[in-house]
Amino acid sequence: MLSEIIYRIGVMKRNPSMNACYKELKKTEFATREELDKLQNERLQELMVFCYQNSSYYRNVFLAQKVNPIESVFKVSDLRFLPILDKKTLIKENESIHTIKNYNFKKLFFSETSGSTGEALTFYKDERWDSYNRASINRGLSWFNVNPWDRNGYFWGFDFNFFKQFKIKFFDMLVNRFRLFSYSDKELSVFLKKCRKAKYLEGYSSMIYEVAKLANKNGIKIDNLSLIKGTSEKIYPYYHKETIKAFGCKIVSEYGAAESGIIAFECPEGQMHLNEETAIVEVVDGRVIITNLIARSFPTIRYDLGDFVELSEEKCSCGREHKVLKEVTGRVGSNILGENSTFYPSLTLYYVFKNIALQHGIELAYRCEQKVLGQLDVYIEHDMTKSLVKILDNEFKKYFNGNISCNYYSTQSVRVKGKKLKDFVSFI
Image 1 (tube, one colour):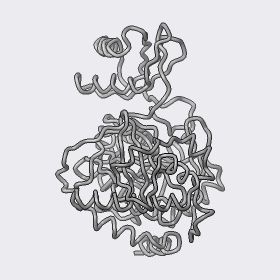
Image 2 (cartoon, one colour):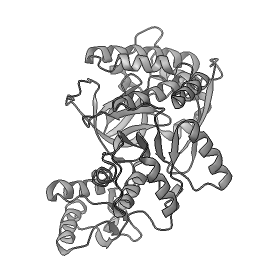
Image 3 (cartoon, helix red, strand yellow):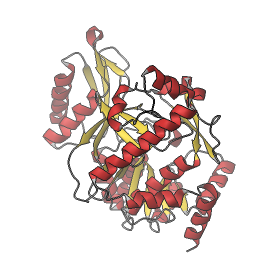
Image 4 (cartoon, helix red, strand yellow):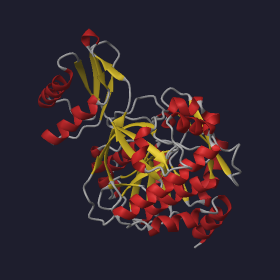
């Protein structure tokens, strides 16, 4: 098959170690708990020695904590003695964290990611790190009998000019991909027509949800897909109703970040398994702390990714013994300011609407905005009935103790009007 040939040639050129990484990941796919623990300890020790020898930042951190991985073995259980790393430190100590001046990597890839503050984090990713990341994604695809070269649709479009679109479409053609650039009737019609010959779809979950709603509104149903993969955003339960109706599939979650790699991937049984061969996941005060076991050019040891998560001890019926990420409950965000200058974490909204779903069976798409002290504007994709307003009032009073008054608005879409497709990438 031509698409497979092109894909394999591209892998040989860009990621020569990826096939070996993929085979290793498939080999440990059903490893025992003991085998996974042993592998993590071995890879952590290798990482610590490498950082001690090649990163001036980590060497200073280790010395300050009286840690010398060359003289003594460092285990996963010892990580708690090291400080937690945040994104500001990654930016401030960027050069000293990097190891590229002390170690000769055969190939490096430049990466850039911006945070909520808009301050960019730039770093170089070594080829083995990049290969493991791509191989981890491919292993997840394989759980759904999908190959990376299969025909696929991409919900990651931007409103580029004609020439940039032409360039992107050319590269998409090489990887057997098509994508959505806008929500125009013409673009949407063409995209959905191509979906009928696709094996899987992927991209921002909020965009997938919006397109599924439009497809359902127009009576369009696609039933030939094996997988819909959402990434970079939280996937809300109400998304699945629309995507199952439109595409015959729920959205499968892939969780990770550019600087930390793939952290977890959802299996066919609906459980998100940690990618324990490449990352150690700790939960400290509800926040996810990641140690990337593979990264060498820009190591991240005990990195606070900025999300609240829950882990589960539950064993999955799929047979994989990798630990389960029960839920990504939300991104650490801005506070909500109540009367008398009372602060409430934005995560409180998650629990308000989760309770409504669990206790009343009502799953709501929502967006909340605060413009006035002690007031919250709540936009909901639902008819604003008296019974719903009563339920909302009771839940908000329960969590905000009467310090927040709410204005409710019914809307066809929680997406902010006037935003271009490229702006529609933030958490709702």
